[in-house]
Picture (cartoon, rainbow, N blue to C red):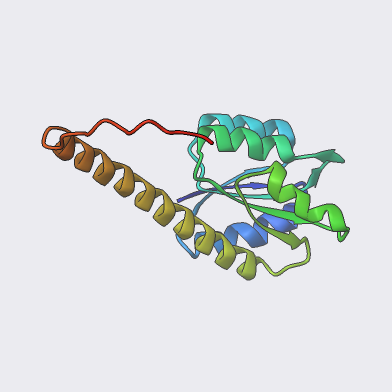
Length: 156
């Protein structure tokens, strides 16, 4: 499992990296939005842990770029915001799994990351199995099922 940490605080990188690596993640670190975009475009990332602002700029475009490359990615957003508009971020970023304060302990962030990645992986597996089974059912039933013409629909 591969993780990208996008934050401009080196101490935060160190704590998160250690916590995620003990849980089996390979960790890539970016301290700028440009570096985060480059990593997101190059690799297949399972977990993105990012600060909402990096060097004073919004980092949302990194999450959107990573989602295009890895649709099953799990994103954890770290922010200091507490306003009511925070829930709108779930509409803006489809991969958003959790919004946490920047002061949350690294171990809790790592546990949420594991939970999100496992959940996204199992949902993707179920969706693939459903598509496979549906296709198999259609192939087996199309040849043997005779359809009856529909009766005309009368609207009164």
